[in-house]
Every structure is written in C-alpha cells, then in structure tokens.
Image (cartoon, rainbow, N blue to C red; front, side, top):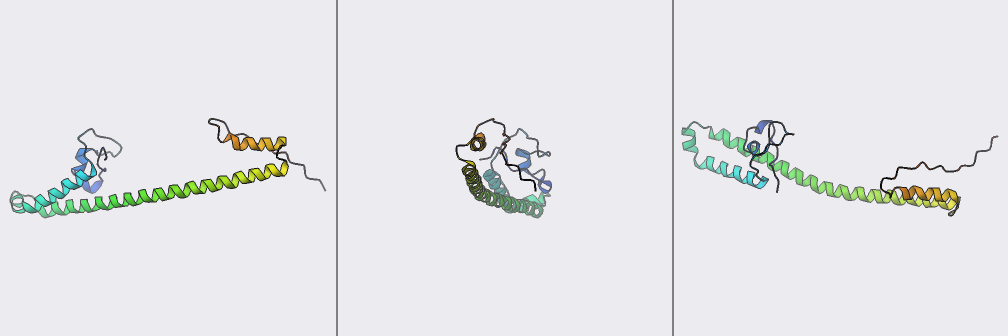
Length: 159
C-alpha cells in the first residue's frame, strides 16, 4: 500500500517505524526495507502480546515491561487515531472537491450568461460583440495570453 510507514515524531523516535523508512529529518528518505501500515500495526500488536506472554523472563533480564507495553500501546492508539483522521479528511476532500466543482460550474454559467447579455445589448453581430466573444474563446486556448478587452463606451455628456 505505502512504500514507507508514516514518519515518526518526537515521542516515538527510534521506534521500529523510524528504522524502516523514516529518518530524523522528515524530508529525507532513507533507503531501507519498507513495510506498509498494516504490517507495522500487526508487528506492534504481536510485540505487545509477546511482552505480556514473556513478562517474567523479560523483567528478570532487566526490561521494564510495563513501560514498554504502555509505550507501544500508546503509540498504536495515537497512530490508529491519526489513521482515522486521515480517512475522515480524505472523505471531506472528496466532498469539498464536489462543492468546488459545482461552484466553478455555477460561476462559469453566471459569467458566460453575463457575457451573452452584454453581447446582446451591444448587438450580437457587432464588432464589439466579436471582441467579447474572443474573451470566452481565449480561456480555452492553451498558452494564449489573457487579452485586454476594450469595450467601446460612449463618453458621458458634460453638463
């Protein structure tokens, strides 16, 4: 699914995830074995289970099993919460994209309708209307620079 696991932050530096793809500098990629998020989650869940099963032997060897289990459990909870947040944001992004697309379509209809009305007022086949038509056409031509549209205006009578 992912070439590298999520990057780690302060509290989890040196964790298994940071050893398989993330570096101390979050912008730097490290060429190492890659694992996906499901594999990282599964590995940590298995490690928690092993800590519980082998508690006595590990404590006898000097490991602080309670602290290790708490750290892994908290890291797993934090990661799961971030994953859920990411999935929520993906869904929100899709909704936002649909709203934005609809807004642009409505704006185009409004602007295009106004352009049609302006051409109708000054005479659909007039030279001035042809200038206005080029405004709409220019946005569809790749690489065409925006044109300054000079709309002839009758001077106001001086009183």
